[in-house]
Amino acid sequence: MEFKIADKEYQLKFGIKFIRELDKIYKVDYQGMKFGMGVNLAFMNLNQYNPTALAQVISAAVSHEQSPPKIYQVDNAIEDYALENDGLSKLFEDLLDELGKSPVAKDTLKVFKKNAKVQIDQEVQ
Image 1: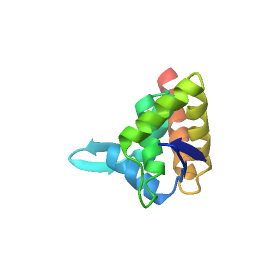
Image 2: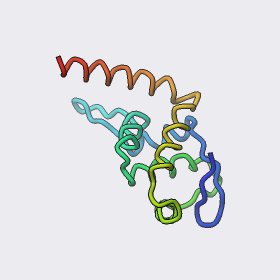
Image 3: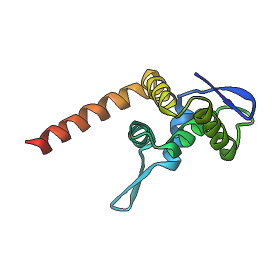
């Protein structure tokens, strides 16, 4: 997937470096131990159409670049996209789709979705 930032097309990559960058942002503290939950929490935020999650995910997805864009440039690109496309829904859907195709993230997401469904089903009963 490509995304235009500061008049340049960037290839978004959803590999190990992407996950490592998300783990720096999305952490869970459990009894004094910190765990990276980047893929899971980013996935949840994207599903809730959280615009700041878009910036974090895109920024992590271009972190493989030798000279990645700054976060303010990513923010500006997202705002430009929203103006040009009458909103962000397609961008959310495209990112969720690409994330689900990632060879290194798809199994994590599959387990996360399964566990979330089990939790919801138990709460309903």
